[in-house]
Image (cartoon, rainbow, N blue to C red; front, side):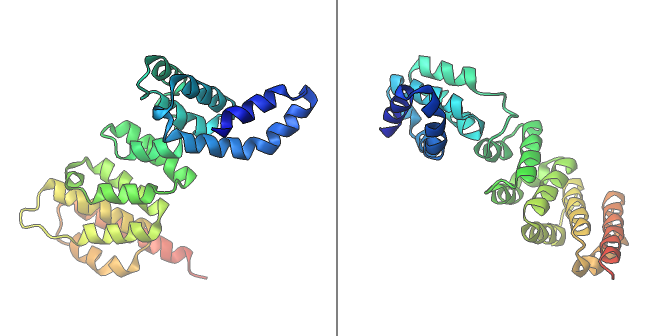
Amino acid sequence: AALPAIVGALARLPTEARGAALDATADYLEQALVTLTDTLTTLPAEAALEVIARASQVGGAVAIDLYDAAAHHAVPEVAAEGARLAPEPTVFSPRRALAAIGANDLALRAAALEYACREKTPGAAAAVEALLQEAGFKTLPIEEKKALLSALATLDPERGLGAARQLFSQKSLRGGLAFDETRAAAALTLGRLGDVHSRRALEGLAGRASPGLKDACLEALNRIDEVAGSQTP
């Protein structure tokens, strides 16, 4: 309720005073907009359009999230304005990135993972970890498995190591390509993280695994040696 009053008061200030006033209220205005994002669809159309206009002045992730929320407003005019202003899906805010990590669009997910790793997006590690635990993870292409494990290792090395160890050590009576590819992706992550404690298991599997999994184990062992060598004084 305070947002329209703040905006109106700023508009009535002399030009020379408005800049200082905007600087003084910028933090509050941005926080107010963040709060309004989750309730925007409940606002009357006129109030929602005013909030959207203020968001365009703040810009950044705050504006992106408000535009996305506005696009789901029940009033067509508000929804159309939100859709018009919302950037393309690969222009991320933290909220957008978290949603895209769970998307079925692999290209969008890859872009979201890149953003999340670069920006260290809060909650991203948990979102990736949840994907690794889904039944559908085992049927993903190996490059997608590698990308998810690599992202988790970047976002939270401890979680990444735990997930890679768990996936590498899993057993299956039926085996198969999908099973081998999951273990191969996990092996490569163990190598990247320099997990010396997995050396014996990697060596054992490298001697009897299928060609693709064997190559992954050998590459992981080489990487572990490289990491150990770089840490030697």
